[in-house]
Image 1 (cartoon, rainbow, N blue to C red):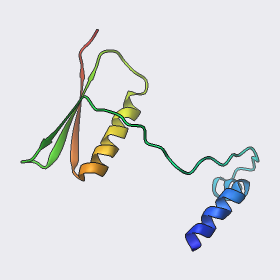
Image 2: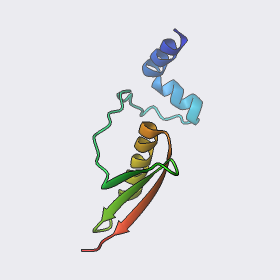
Image 3: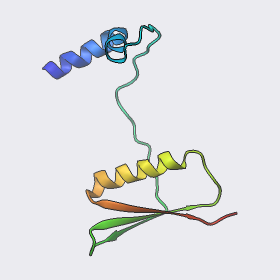
Image 4: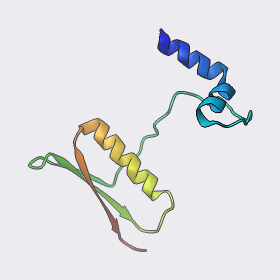
Length: 96
């Protein structure tokens, strides 16, 4: 019940929470959707190494990509949530 009350207050009074927690007097705040959608993504290669109970995640990259570090982090988090074990991530640049 307290959780729902707090969620209600955060949604109804976002400016007050902004001022309180960020010490920011700006009233230019917006309430966003609380449902965080996960778009399906496919890793290039995922292997479970049973002897070490870890996952080997391979990503092959042809050209530099600004969003790559965030994508690799997203893969790591999703793999951990799914398999609950360590991941070793290897980026292999194959060039164009």
